[in-house]
Length: 239
Image 1 (cartoon, rainbow, N blue to C red):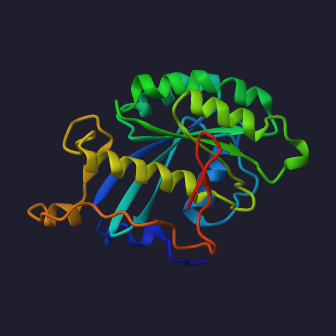
Image 2: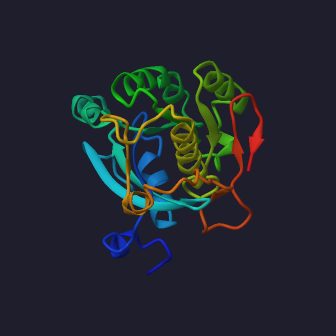
């Protein structure tokens, strides 16, 4: 069924201001592929199998006046693929770090995943921690407050989402992109520098002589009503 975000059909026609590389990482069984499928196809992925190695997809989003194309690398969580998947971490601008709120072991292993991402990704890597399967509150093994503290201690963003219902699924991808755009505007990140995980798109290059500053506006995914609710480290909310 066609939808407004049929990326495959429009990829050759669309223009964008920035291209950003993301990695989706975390233990096997946390729902990484389902989370990504919900974000790119606006539907739940039934009968999802464990990812073998790495799978690629993309989606173009809009933040204020900027169009950003996201390169999304979904990595396998199984240990036997670790040597393969880690090679895809290199030069990543953003990391979506996923755990399962109903599986405490997936939360306890987060430090290893974060350390690998920071060692191999862009020096300015932006990481968003996602507690997936928020629809299964009755089976919860990791409290929101505990995960929020861990995220704050490690200086990363945090929220919970449900790949089944679609609740808050767009938020981590958009929050990550917005943080990267702000780093570009502040001068902390240079898209022309090798290994930054970001490059200019055709739209930006056409305006290279423009003196206008980046304009972000509000986070905008365009598909779901009610806006995006985001919990930041420390319990505060934005959007």
